[in-house]
Length: 159
Image 1: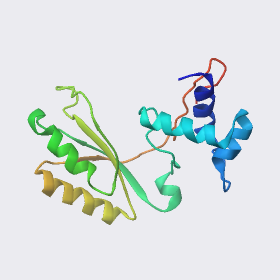
Image 2: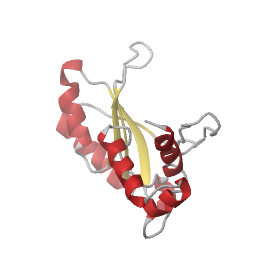
Image 3: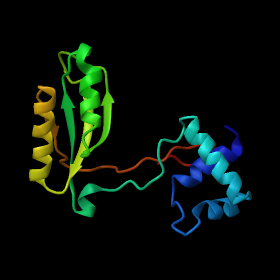
Image 4: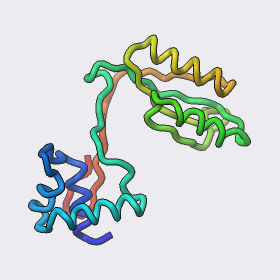
């Protein structure tokens, strides 16, 4: 990844241009052609540095409900359970984390959204039936931050 890639990544994650040709606009701002921007974006995706390009929405502000969920999954079942969770359209993120037994037994964490509390409960119940394991829902009490920005240069602020 070179300096132009870092500048492109920094620019793409903040105020992405909502115009008919956003990559042309990014190219203008960065002093390169639309074609070069597209080539670099494809290369960054192929290298696994960019997972997706799209908005990060606050579920409540767009009329949906969301929740963080956790499961204690036997290690020999983690792959299958994670695949079942990931296949659910309501699930937006799905991660295995190290369980901290004694303090926190959960090793599979995921977030889901739905159009209503009832629909969210229905998705959770369906996942419990499909996996045969209980799911702990940790609803939002208060938000402190939504979103993340990564710094790719020494002078760019984190935030």
